[in-house]
Length: 138
Image (cartoon, helix red, strand yellow):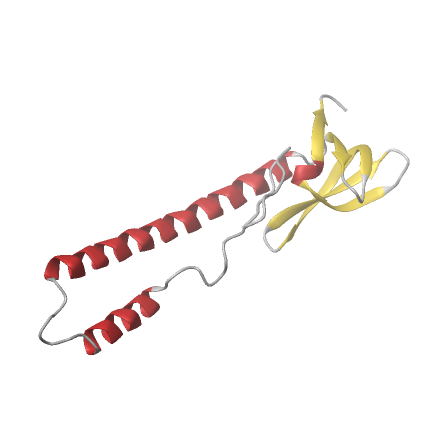
């Protein structure tokens, strides 16, 4: 997930969506392994426990990653709301210049700014990463 923050270029997530193993998928793999194992050469208990411990660690890591993503999203939302009424310099392909942040909206959880220049032009859907400077005073 790419999240915006002030002055940060959003990164692209290169992890394939099917690269993670869910708990259900792991259990199916485990049951298939047990179903087709050689009864004369059963799986070693230590190896089995190591696999379970590894899966538990992966699941904990996945949960922590989701929590960090939520915290980052809350942080970027707080940054965007803090910009309301502030003069900012925006440098994006769609909108460039200095203006006042007049509104904050959210698109798929990502904050989008509305910036109004002194000439009356309005930039809608400005990303936080496109804000280059916050000017002191109004």
